[in-house]
Length: 183
Image 1 (tube, rainbow, N blue to C red):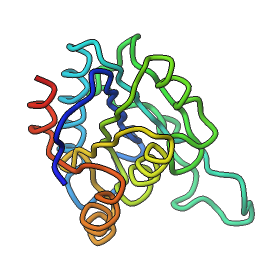
Image 2 (image 1 turned 90 degrees about the vertical axis):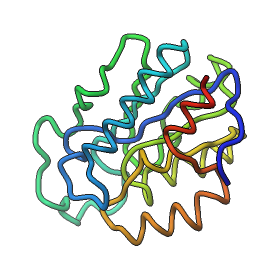
Image 3 (image 1 turned 60 degrees about the vertical axis):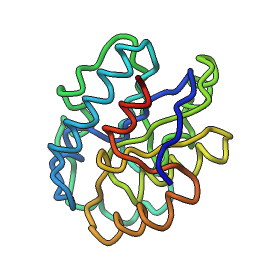
Image 4 (image 1 turned 45 degrees about the horizontal axis):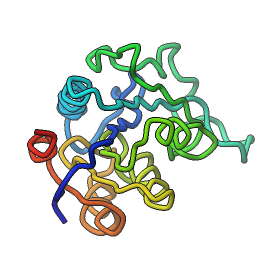
């Protein structure tokens, strides 16, 4: 379902647009996803709306005998992409799991600001984006996914998430339509 409206206190939540993730192969060019995410961030900031930049470090506790995929990540793996033009007013969330709500203060940060709706973008559609969308829905937020500002390493996972999973918990629409609704 396309986006119909944006609440007066809507926040943008961008998932894992960081150097290490952006360097991985994806179904859609990561540079385009980053550019669209940066467009959204600039528009939200211009309107005084919260921008949340989520980055992943490490991994969830659990199996410690499995080596990290691809070996040890580079030192700048978790650095947010400079194209996002991080501002002092931005909320930065560091997570250790797929979703941005689990074991972070994201819900607290959003509620303090009176946020009732979130717009999501980032990488990976079938992991961080989908997990965050599900949790946001469970926390009672209205969720919109900017479909052309998300991608996944696996094209089929991306397709299933966008066509089958995300529409069950979110409105799914383009960056241009989200910007139009921002006014």
